[in-house]
Amino acid sequence: MKRINEKGFTLIEMMIVLLIISVLLLIALPSMAKNLGVAKNLGCRATLDLVQGQVGAYEADKEEKLTDLNTLVSEGYVDTVKCPNGNALELKGGTVVEAAD
Image (cartoon, rainbow, N blue to C red; front, side, top):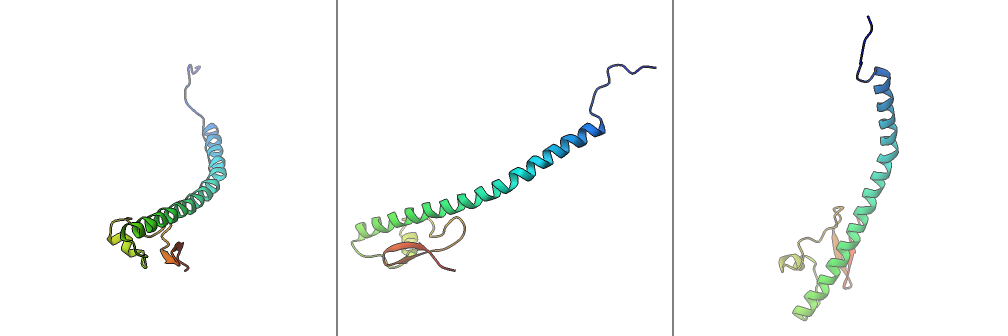
């Protein structure tokens, strides 16, 4: 008897497809992990710039120098004084910097 109109994949074809997908993932994952780190660093830089701008706004509104960044949070100028990577920010000489560990 002859089989007519056989449909579907053989086991070998499925294994080849899985091998190709695995190789593509091995190539793509390190690149994605690197990009995540770059994005977090850029997010921290943007947060630094935002908080620095709010320090200037606070000083212009209150006509006094800011001594503690937590004042910006309590006064409603910013929501947080932390970078997206979790590092705290601090005020040194009127400039917002990432706190040293």
